[in-house]
Length: 372
Ligand SMILES: Nc1ncnc2c1ncn2[C@@H]1O[C@H](COP(=O)(O)OP(=O)(O)O)[C@@H](O)[C@H]1O
Ligand SMILES: N[C@@H](CCC(=O)OP(=O)(O)O)C(=O)O
Image (tube, rainbow, N blue to C red; front, side, top):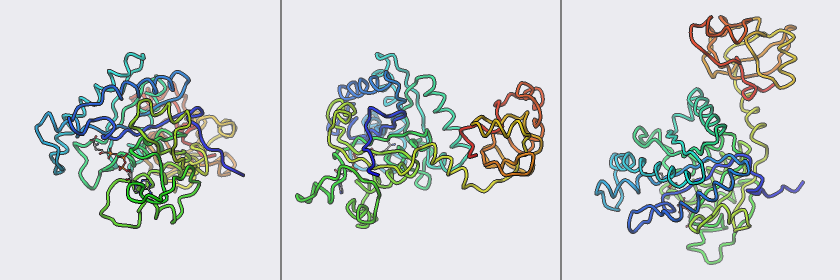
């Protein structure tokens, strides 16, 4: 079956990566305000037809270095972090200012690699981003450069953007770049390099084209974009690389501007269910017949339907779900600890606050966090 090339017109949830070079004029260190205003028009158009949009934007170091008089040379990590702290305020305000005339609210999200490696933090980030998108806001994501040391840095926003696409369950990720896609070789140095419009599998040949094998010293470029493509497509998200420098690059992409699409083998929901199903359960929830029926029709698991809880598990940990006859029904991520689950098992959701002494979520396992 021939795979269909994605179109931005079909995106339900879109993540767009915007690099420093697009946002900030290298010569003056100033924000490219006209370009950003045009991008905001693209975003407003997408939002108006119901597409959720998350922007992953760098630019904080580039915007902050001038204010601190740090010149335009390479910076040691601690100075880059200092510049980011100054520039991030300006960056967030710039997005707020260009989105506001379209009636759109900007939200700031700062994360590190550690936040996505830790399941609880990942689930919290996912929940907050989901709430923001549900409220119509436009999350603006960057690395939390203050706390990110080398070991816990994404280091480049290509991989951060792919991780965000996975976190929010995006179906499309667009990397706005200084090149209009992947070529058979670096087009800046090889005049015979051929453009590749669609990649349906990242084979060793494709990796070699991006210079992956060349040198561990070479940074950025296509290597991090291929890493991003692996992460995104593995989670069911299509990824495009397209030229970002012109005005309205998202509009241009939708109208057929040259790009490379990396195709996913699955969809985001199926990929997430497979991820949950593959986890080793830390505990067991036994449910009654009514709850078993509710789960098979795609509903969340409420504490009222739980008749037994086994094991010590934390919030966000995977647990097995067992029916009244002992049959394995599936896996899910618990929203309560084992002790909390034992306390609220068999109780109505409205009683949770009285039982625990603090308010909690209505479901013990949300339907999005379940593989049945
Ligand atoms: N096979 C390839 N196809 C396209 N670009 C390549 C390839 N190999 C290396 N490159 C280089 O990667 C660059 C894009 O990476 P980079 O400059 O880091 O992008 P950005 O700043 O947009 O994140 C291109 O301009 C090109 O010089
Ligand atoms: N987080 C930092 C650096 C991120 C960065 O340089 O990313 P990229 O533009 O993808 O190379 C910033 O905002 O300046």
